Length: 84
Image 1 (cartoon, rainbow, N blue to C red):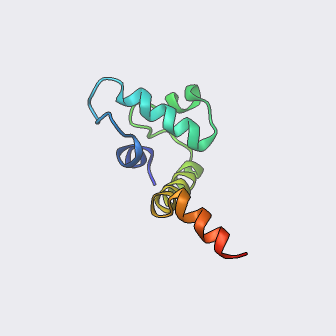
Image 2: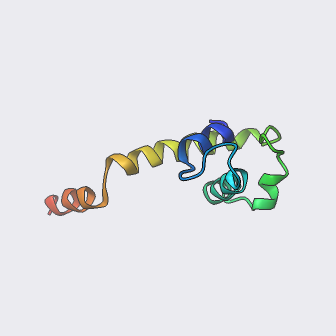
């Protein structure tokens, strides 16, 4: 998954083109990849300079985020409790 696509899907409250969107995107990408914000900024304004491995990492994070949305914390604790 490309960084711009990931941001479109997971950066909330700020839309592309609005002030602060790029910075919010950099913060989210930094959090999910474990890379510094400075490193991510070095990829360029459209993130085209990103390493190939980042696309795989972002796809995995996207899938995990989708699972988190489907399985709410309360649902998970109910499931774990029922296994006793």
